[in-house]
Length: 338
Length: 285
Picture 1 (cartoon, rainbow over the protein chains, first blue to last red):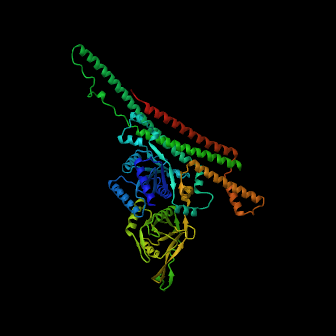
Picture 2: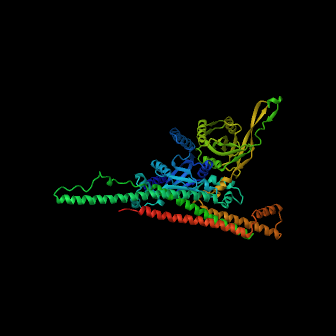
Picture 3: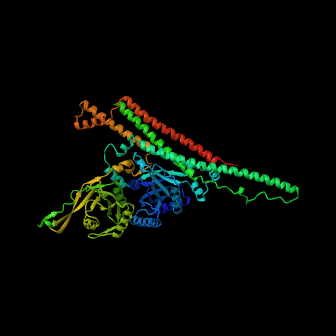
């Protein structure tokens, strides 16, 4: 017995060194229920909370969580929030809950979670814990009988770039990073203790029709789609703004380069004539000249995030429309049969 | 009671008609605490949070464990812990107040009266929920109790635990799906289409059942039941009667709407990949 534990410790130590990539997030049914309760109760306000659990090799186990009070933009309240967090962790440790932060959860509406805030929070967490995850839950989609739970992390190459704040076109090409590579979705595995499993088997109602069936077979998806398209249009506007920014930048850049060329040309002919006259040539570079001041390149981060959002809306529209097809054909079949 | 002027032996009846509603999270929570209980502890106890609905039903929505020590005739509850945790919970959701307490084990035990007394000081008429984690009678026994005072005039003689009906709100669990909450491991959360498929299969099975039943009745294999017949006819009648023409128009219109949206989203995606190429490839030499 002692032997096996010793070995497993050794194994753990060994894996620690190798640091295998995070493959699966294993989440307890309890945590799912807690997250849903918190997010649903406060919907449409967006809420967050802390995830507690263990980091075991390539699996991140999420065994408990607790909600954060709704955040306010006040210094004092923020300090209180930190106190709350410590207090809660201390209390939970006393009843033997895993007392190790592994990330946070947050609610979202219509899957619009790809924001700079999320990236910033992630970087903050990442500083303290090597491996962390963000679980996103979408209450607006759960009305359609879908368990809209996602585990996300930022990709390593993106984090590198973000740390150096290097979102120029050149760097991105170098790293071969495109907007798809910002977020990585990690597959979620659900686990329940044997006790809970026994209880649920016992308490499961034996009705042939479940609540989620009703919701899945709802014919009216239009409000959801409408909102989605609305958001999509907004995002498209934002994206075109971003693109205009780039166009502006490129136009300025090419104008500047033309000016530089013209100046060089002038300087060379001048030097030529000076040489002919036996004078010292003037230097070919002149940093004080405003023509050589580099124009800052706008960051691509925003446009990447917007692109992510848009693609997310597209996916949702596709998914929901696809389901509507099935429903419509089902309805047609029912009607015909009658 | 005192105003009646007579000394009557009676149960105070104020709390006889209440019932409690238990959300699945509470059960999950309690089970988790029980699994994580300290070494020697035989049971775990804790506080139930929720609210009392206008009709007197106690809505139990949340819970947390409170460390305690129990010997044969003494119970020590960590009251500080209880208050700290309560404060923390109230910061998140001020609407949830103490409604009672829980304990694992089958039914009420000796120490329960003492703990109940403590909670009675925190809130009037606390509910005591017991969860039989030992499966004593081979079933998952969940029981709710309230305490009823036996009094002689003004004098309190004893308290009795009276069982109250429990309403398990399994709708929320259903919404997530028992396929996720029941087994000990699920490899993957079902996505939209898989869920849809499962629902449709269930619907199909139900329709088959109804078919079979109706056939059986028609052929005289099963005795007809008027109630079931009524239900079936109501169900069939609930499909709105539309002329084939209007129905076709309705379906086709919706189909076209969806197709348009699909088209739009595909175009958007194409646009995105194009924009990406242009944005990152554009370079002035």
